[in-house]
Length: 494
Image (cartoon, rainbow, N blue to C red):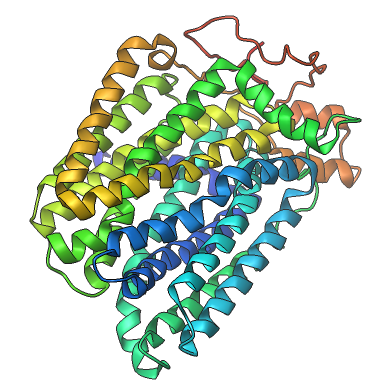
């Protein structure tokens, strides 16, 4: 009986953790998302190795930072446009188009490498192009998640989405680093191995495109406001964020983490070679994989936190773990400890990001969700602001010393915010009522004439709202508590 009870408990825990994958539409999305980020993470390694090889001697860290700038800068300017497009067009179509473009960029990069024509500035321009495509793709990709699962599974779905992304951080860097050397024997030029691995990323992007064709076309387009032109729509997203203090707070907090954490990811090749003494791509790949393992653990934990309403505490604990272990990573010169510290740091980062992302997606209304998520994606554009000075400091003072100082600064900032901002400390997102259908399932049934629009609203838990006058959208009634009303999926509190 004891064994049977233990087995049942284990089965229930696993079923709870993977509950969103029981939804067919989310399962196809998860598969495509994993293939997409597998390619992206492999390219992160390949691009860093290329930049390290092609950058002038003595400017290696700065060379890595500039290539990162090329990939991240478009997100500041292009992501808001991508968010507006995601709110106005069919999100499935947008994903297919942008992922196809990413595949073509990978193919072109492969050709340049294999023909030995790649130069540093070509790499910079290709990184810029990839960043532009990513900026158009990600708002739709993020805004799609609440449409694919019943409302009560949202945090589980967000966490599983991030779990898949972190699984790619485990497999992709190690795979890319391991394959470069053996495939180089059949390559053309010194970077032949990199070229063949880049070809693999093209194949993965193609797999991602194929998976998006399995998503239903119905329910993928939000209802936009009539008579709203492009500029009004673009400004409307920022106006909503500014008029909704809790969303503004969450987005600013979401930008703070990559500002401090991402430069460490960029400098991992420096740590691998100059701190830990491991040449080639293997050390870098193992550090990336260790971070992925930690991130995967963090998202699996988060997948079981959907019933815990106090997201403010979860975010603070996660961010503190991240900053503390980043400082430990910068301090150590032992490779095994470095892998451990970077793993635990990423566990904390994923606890923060899963809770932050769930809160934003739950509160933002569907017709504005793409634009809100695009503003969140602009945080990736903030990364170079932290990357460039930190990488320049690393060239001068050493990578380890720089990371320790930056992490201690982050710990101080977190302590001040947690003490001084009760709205962040006490942020709550109450659990949504259980729903029978996801929005896309209901929309498909309406299109097929099986149920009415009113019945679809009931089965998804939606509550139709009369649009509020401009300038008064989503005003908060209280500063320290956010409770999403039961049965109002995606509706922020009035």
